[in-house]
Image (cartoon, rainbow, N blue to C red; front, side, top):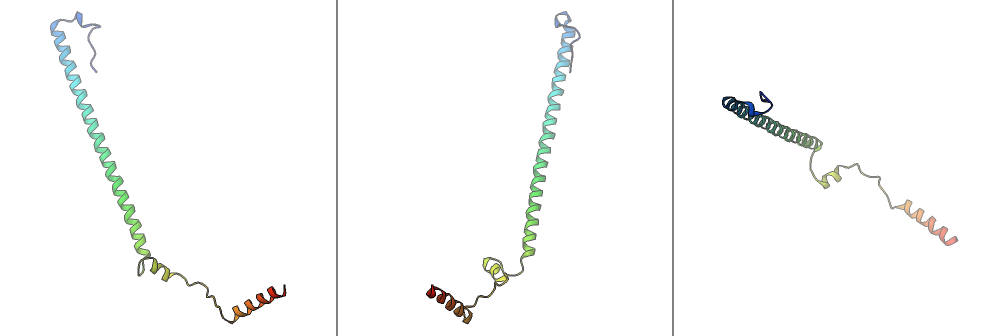
Length: 111
């Protein structure tokens, strides 16, 4: 930053005042240019960070898609998932059920 040669500009000659003014203008010009460059660098860094986030998000989504596609064997959907499940234990309502029902009914009548 520019500093004055003396405490006040009253003691300066006209040429010294002109030189001081010229130096101040140049310092201001350089300050403005450096701030503009810093803003430009900052905005480019932010844009790059956004692009990196988008690329990472796309990569994660593609990985999830590949994982889901790897699980997929044949038909897709709720009916296919039901068909591919392990069958449950078979429940019979035959002679065994009749014997059990008869025993229960006999207990009810005796009570």
